[in-house]
Length: 94
Ligand SMILES: [Zn+2]
Image (cartoon, rainbow, N blue to C red; front, side, top):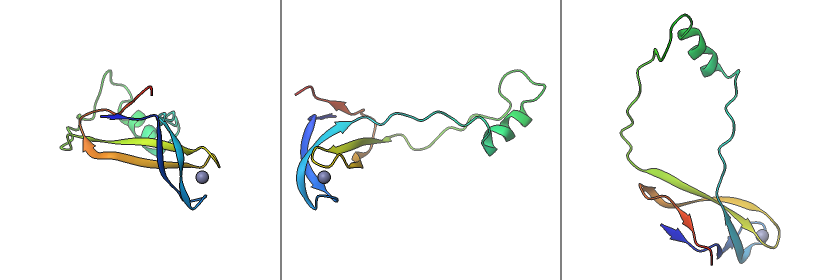
């Protein structure tokens, strides 16, 4: 799915339609001391490789999230394009 780099959408802060630039969200780093990570580390103690069975998800598509940055007030909103799709979002150069 191809989307233009700049689109005219509603900004909740400016309370009107303004030009927004599209930005791909970056995945944050995993916390090393979260509850799930500690539980997993406890489970695989003494073993090599994976202990817990792999989960096969039934959902086939992923939600394609894009960050919209307002050009006037720099406010950022998250927007999902296309619902659950298999196609990845590409931002057009022009
Ligand atoms: Zn704005």
